[in-house]
Amino acid sequence: MSITHLQSFVAVAEEGHVGRAALRLHITQPPLSRHILALEDELGTPLFERVPKGMRLLPTGEALLHHARRILAEVDVATRTVREAAQGSGAASKPPA
Amino acid sequence: MSITHLQSFVAVAEEGHVGRAALRLHITQPPLSRHILALEDELGTPLFERVPKGMRLLPTGEALLHHARRILAEVDVATRTVREAAQGSGAASKPPA
DNA sequence: GGTAGTTACGAATTTCGTAACAATC
DNA sequence: GATTGTTACGAAATTCGTAACTACC
Image 1 (tube, rainbow over the protein chains, first blue to last red):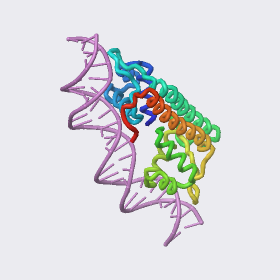
Image 2: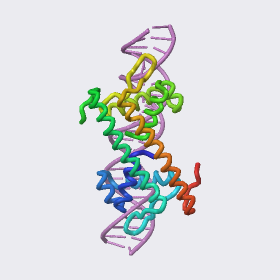
Image 3: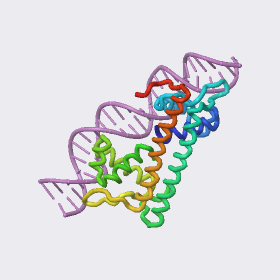
Image 4: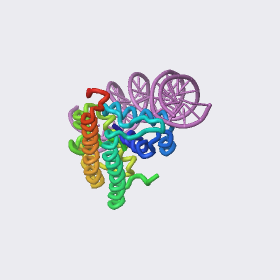
């Protein structure tokens, strides 16, 4: 499980549609579809039900969604916190791109 | 920032030594060293002070360590929760390796 | 000279996007 | 036949480990 996979999962869960999620993530459908399949394979269970309109979360997916959002938020906080700590101590070695 | 990088970071932070952390992670020193350098580069600040005995956490590193542990723990919980949800609904498609 | 981290470099793996496919309405 | 997700496949990018290097006692 990678952070990229979790970002992909959340996007598909929120859009309910691999194509739209891919647009949102600025990648094409196939790699995004593969991210979901890889996650399902790793966890050993489907996360979505494939319906004619797109992708519908299963209970397993609902369970993951909570945690995925929390993880992604925490990654964000971690990044900001470290950058602030760096600024505070004037120890920055690289200016932000 | 990837989960692998965070695992590497925590191991080095706890061991205070790239070589020992590499043994613990069952990889060699160079990739582990690169993980730390990549993280420092991405965050724009050093996380460790290089001392003769090894690697010593800087305040920026201390700040990251808290979040990194929380993220890794949350990933663990997420994995278990989804697997339990799958068992509960009998929807498992792949037996655990 | 021993111990530590880092850089060079080639091989193996992974990941991407285009194109083709499959399935459902 | 239009819309959706998936598989094939070759190219590009990443990541590994061995070997060589650097720095500090």
